[in-house]
Length: 167
Length: 182
Image 1 (tube, rainbow over the protein chains, first blue to last red):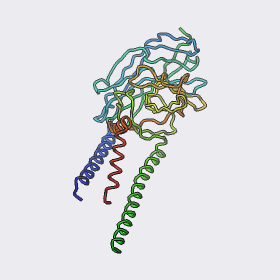
Image 2 (image 1 turned 30 degrees about the vertical axis):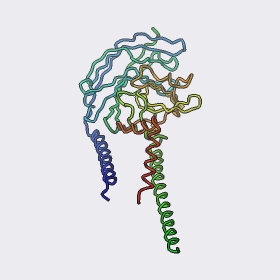
Image 3 (image 1 turned 90 degrees about the vertical axis):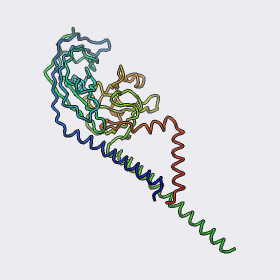
Image 4 (image 1 turned 180 degrees about the vertical axis):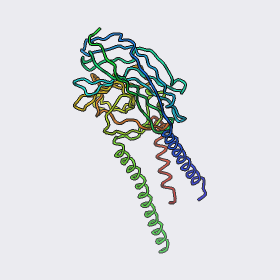
């Protein structure tokens, strides 16, 4: 009853249970944080807008992204993955989402930023439907915890439009 | 000489009963583990509710040896989600690990085309798909990651990369079961 084997077994079980409990509580505490992120995106310039040899439209944009994601960081946050996606409808597809830019934010200090870049990933359509297209730019973020449940949310900004002709 | 025969008989009968009890106990443990696993599969809706991260394609977010909890609901798949997908390459299923969904287009029939990219990779995953495959569809996707535990998956990685450790462990467990008095 008091052999080494029994004691080691009891200790190990207890340690693992407590560890699992702590991880669950850490994850649960994320529900209580008050999150107020904000963002703004401006399209500074349409660099070019062409039809590819395969028949798909492609656009290159320069974006100006301002965001404050500092309130998303809790003590249980490992990193925040933020990305900007363009969303639009076509006659064939009820929804298209094309990711234009992403960033991994490791620390709270870097979460308030202003950046001006051209799109990191190519904005290519399935087809040639982009002329004169209205689209939304959405800033999504995923909060990756040190342990536990991951959270994701977004801000939708609408009112952007592509030009009516290729250039 | 009669009592020696009796003693031998009684020893034999005890051994058999103990052996049977131990076998049944072992069977109970194995089947209850299986029940829990299958139950998890039902609840989460995916074939593999818990996966271990094997590649470094999502660093620094997910390192090798972390455990991911997956679910697969009927919710539409959207950009940014972290997914685990299967690719059939020459008939064999390769379980690939996760990437953030990069491009996602949906047709009005309800089917989707998806392009993925790992955080730590320079380019998207098209090179990993089967020859000529440009998009993933819903049936390729095993599940979405919803939760995460660091470091716990190293046990699985060690056991699969050095199978000798697996044999030693199973041998030791078997020995423990046989030699324990209860």
